[in-house]
Amino acid sequence: MNKILRKEQFSENVFLFEIEAPLIAKSRKAGNFIIIRVDKNGERIPLTIADADVNKGTITIVVQRVGLSSQKLCGLNEGDVIADVVGPLGNPTHIENFGTVVCAGGGVGVAPMLPIIRALKAAGNRVLSVIAGRNKDLIILEDEVRVSSDELIIMTDDGSYGEKGVVTVGIETFIKQEHVDKVFAIGPPVMMKFCCMLTQKYNIPTDVSLNTIMVDGTGMCGACRLTIGGKTKFVCIDGPEFDGALVDWDEMLKRMGTFKRAEQEEMEHYEQ
Ligand code: FES
Image (cartoon, rainbow, N blue to C red; front, side, top):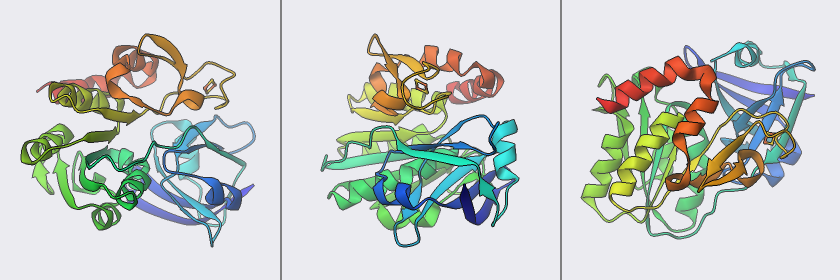
């Protein structure tokens, strides 16, 4: 049982939770994720750890209310408990001093990007961040990202905050401004696909963090399998981060079929 110590509502459907999980807080690294079950019959929800406080023994996650399980989770309040939290899972992000890096986070993808931004900055990189959302209300963790970035571009689809346009516009602004050694992109699959298409044009290696459907999170069930560089990989144990140029995005979008309509809308939006 893990107690919720803090809940914050970022927008209509996006919530931050600070949860008691001292062992995970101590051992997690940027890029690690957890699997949550709200109650003992609950579906398993994989969520990347956005932050941790070793002294308080807490981890922070950001959740978007998209289906029944996340709805149940978002319905919990401070003082409530979560049946189980398993982690840290997955491989940590490969961090080194690459030189100049662009970190692009779309929607709730900004939450898993935050620890990566901090780790890249601590490793001596020049960090140029882009955070994007459909509108001003969906821009999250701006202050936290700004503090750890050398420069920040905010993009909103409707222009209600920052620059008007999609995340790739912000990435390309930085690429045209100066030499970029590496890009990290986290967000909806179609967003990451378009980020990779852009960076391939400029030959810039790009890492993405894949948030597929997961069941056990330990490589046993195969629910998270994907083709990466022509080989079958399990996102939970081989990832969750991969070289975006090697990801079979069409297969990933097909396997995430549950969100087909939303993805179609995103796709049309990015193809404009
Ligand atoms: Fe079961 Fe990855 S979630 S193999």
